[in-house]
Structure formats: structure tokens, C-alpha cells
Length: 185
Image (cartoon, rainbow, N blue to C red; front, top):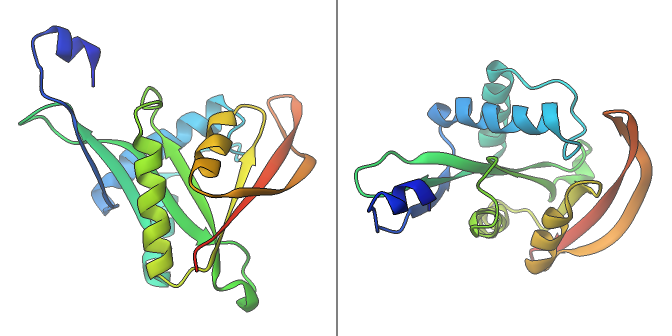
């Protein structure tokens, strides 16, 4: 809940919704992702994806039958739902033998952490991935600044299956990734 609204006398709990992403959500998704690209080593991308790129990714995932979700928060009745995070399951690798394996991506808007939004979003993502025929989900997490991401995945029954050392270079330093995996069926 936004503390300023609460102090101002609003006592309603925020309404949290996890739903499929729409084209209208893409500007907010692009903004959230750009923050992580520009200011963190959470992602190894070095240039933010333009809105057109997000539109292509959204269309591609929809065409493949893969889930692309957002979590929204409305701070009170009559207030707009703000996109507070997004998640999707893309291809793990392009070769046909990997068709039933996906890689999850999940990001929360800065300041949205610690409210249970990531757990709600990732839980629903895994349910929808299973419905889409995904049997194995892999998470690739930069361990330099993302201990919360590893913990979140482990709370949802992912297990660490490996580490790749010094495979990324961003913001002047070499970075490792942790590989996590969960079976869906």
C-alpha cells in the first residue's frame, strides 16, 4: 500500500490483480525493463528494448501460446490499476527438442518489492506455463544483485542446478549467473 495514501486517511487495502498482458501494458513494461537495463546488472541487456521490440516479443509469445502476464495494483477503490511487474515464459533454446522447456523472466517495478507481488506473479506464470505445455522451466539469475530472485524461485520449488562463472560483463565487472530449474509435470 502506498504509505502516503494510507496516512491521508485511505484505509482500503490495495487490489492486486495478475492477468495476461495487453498491448496497452507494453509502455509500462518497457519502462520497468529499461530501469533494470540501465541501472542494474539484473539483466545482461545493455540497451533498453524499444516499445516496438516489446510489441514483437508480446506478439511472438502469444503466437507460441506462451504466457505473458502483468501484476497490477490499485491503491484503492476508483483508483487506476498500475502495472507493478511483468513476467513471461519464452523459449529456453530455439532447437525443436527444447520445445517443452521454457525460460522465465520476471521483473517488478522499482518500489514494488517485498509486497508478495513477485510470488503471486510467478505462481500464476507457472500455472499458465503448465497449461501451455511447458514441462520444465529454467531461470537464469544474475547473482550479483538478485538474491531475492533466487529466494523467490526457491520458494516456488525451483532448485539450483548450476552456476556459470564470469559469463557476463556489465557496468565494469564480470558477473556470474545461477541456473534454477522446476519441473511442471
